Image 1 (cartoon, rainbow, N blue to C red):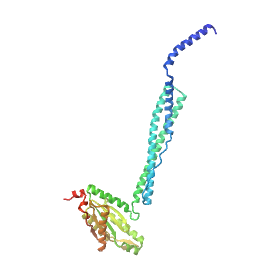
Image 2 (cartoon, rainbow, N blue to C red):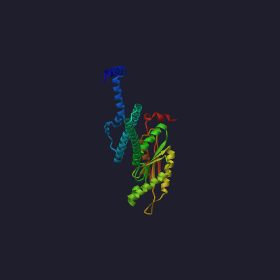
Image 3 (cartoon, one colour):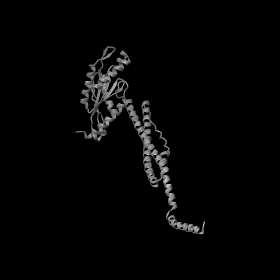
Image 4 (cartoon, rainbow, N blue to C red):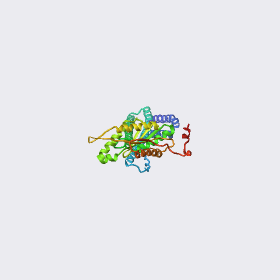
Length: 343
């Protein structure tokens, strides 16, 4: 190589150095590294969001009172369904947020690679991006579907809870359901002054029927009596099997006069009915005690008044209706609401 060539190469290097030096001074290498690190963090964000594991806190132990085993089973099932629903809902929320964050971050990465005009790396990353987004979408759909299924199961549990409150023989409400309804009716009376009356109904001489025809025949009579009473009532009235051969009836929006008329209607209807037991016609009669609810009543006092009226019917020959006495409460125990109702 000639001296001239060396001189030209030296001069060229100097010129290139003079041109590049200001550019190097303008570029902050730390800033470049920071931007590259941020780009890597953004690109990795969807994967860390999707696959990060979080530990669920342990379920708190609950103490349940002594209740019917069927009620306990329903309570346990309902609690399990509730926990699953809450877990699924939280998972859906987390997945939805992760999918939203991933979409925003990956869209940003897409734009960056488009501007850099990459080829193979660009195609590979686009394919992975689409796969992650599709995975998010599928996961959200599966979790939403699971939530719907569990919601249906929860509804079935609620229906089962209602079924447990039904008497298996007569298909009427049972004693537990009646107690709930009585409390509810008293609350409505005291808040909205909506009158109602309570009937205690006893099937006369039921022991004789069992002794004569057997217990299966007695069960058939009970079912027939329950049907006859129910078909004579309004849909708003609440009839329950109180226990054994005894029924309880809550008449909504009915004072003592209306309730007495209904009671006599029930007595007359059943007295005129005939039940066939092995082709043998059998008659049955009712004894009924009626008590109009008072704002001063409690569940116990109202039941006691109706039951005492029923007892007097049984003592005086059965097949009759008697009204209960008004509650006896001292003047100091009268509530302000009751006092306002006085003329």
